[in-house]
Image (cartoon, rainbow, N blue to C red):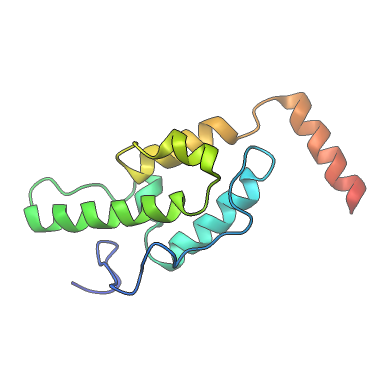
Length: 126
């Protein structure tokens, strides 16, 4: 299997190889955390696991096993980079995409007034 294949598992990629600081603690740092995690996953050729572009092969058992391994690796990287409170919310979700979607839904700022206030505060800082 080619190292460019998203199903390729690099034996040197342990649970500690993707480190984001600070860890995700809530909606206040979600946008920055998300962008850093996207960059890290992209550099490992694993971003497709959270976006859904890399789906589990149904016809090929060997590739399906590789997908399971890579999916679990991505989940472990996410778990290493969230607070303990958030970890308890996502630990039993079976797919990286499911974890990603839950975090997006829970921590994206949807409240227009709150978003305006945060943007205003960020402009005042700069």
